[in-house]
Image (cartoon, rainbow, N blue to C red):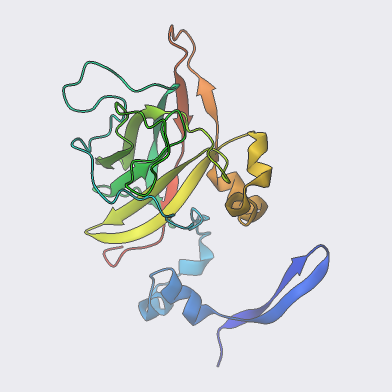
Length: 232
């Protein structure tokens, strides 16, 4: 007996694809495995919408900076901070059941204030030598992560975004990107457009001014939802 349902993918009010969704394949895709059939009430509970997977891109650092902590504005003991709008990026990592995920490695990488990555292939002028370009953070007991960075800017062909990767026990669980909510350039970004309305909603982040900040710092809160790990 098959366990699944038919599906229909629409585009511009016309069916693009009609087929059969095999629940067994879906379970393995979520990392649940065959044992999920034995879990009473598993599908009686609504699973959280996972953060959309997106391409890693060509500029994940091929040579790590001297400093890889969660403060991308200052490298090591330098007294000169990076240029840009200071942003506090934070949130929690959860699995699709809504459980907080502790000890997950969260990595981010992005361009500096002039749109240049920390990568040997990105040899354009304007790299901020004081911007770390990459950072990592291990979630705490409540699944929380935190970075101090700069608000992302655009570069040729892309709207402003921050790359993120989440790993658990050395296994990459998610690769994605977050975008600046309300930025008009998102509508022309080919990767953002492929996400669809639901995916866009899950990756568009409000970079909100912090009240009382004398340096116009920003706060960006983004909760990340990953699939299940074997220990779940």
